[in-house]
Length: 263
Image (cartoon, rainbow, N blue to C red; front, side, top):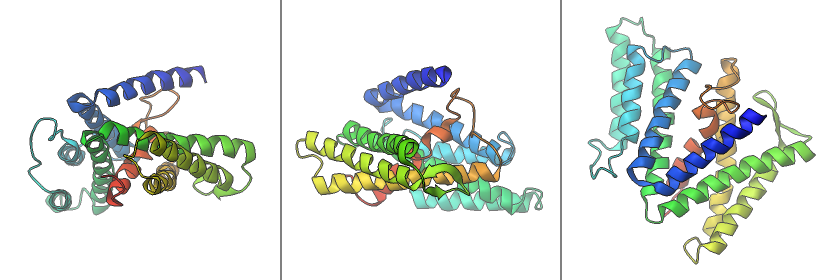
């Protein structure tokens, strides 16, 4: 518990300092986290993380999360074209190796590249928006509030299992507690925003962060259960790996943008 607490404080302070700093430094941190996350994903799914096929995934992560904006550059490909190009490259690998590298393997790696690359790219781009510091802290605070609410309410009042086949410790009561605390957090941000965040939009953002964040957590739990592992990695002693800590983030940030809840 002591190691977990120390790691959490040190990592949390460092990450929040980088969020405050913003710019290229923050973007490079997000890029590093994305590359480590893909490494964890490859290992978790029993694919060689340094094999030739995985290198295509790393290249895809780099293309998704590269700091174009801080460097004053434009992405050479629109997102949909990058998705299609990665898919074709992965499929060509199966042909070129005469199916020694199977369609199942490249499908997993393609999924991981899009899942991780797309999610982390939105985390980086959110900070570059106008009032990006406010929006980034808003989403992170709502996600953390949802996690805290689900944990503490679940511990105190949790009786009804939410999805025991995937995550036996999560409860319906905890899930509701997480949603309520995330909504309250978003409404506090609205009250302090001096009109930047309307109340109705704050409610929608809080609800989205809680519901989608909890689903992202369940997705990661499902993958780990399939491969019979406790954590995706061991980078953060007592906390697991990057994917263990960011499983909610990398689905919440894209979804909130797709729902056009941010300007």
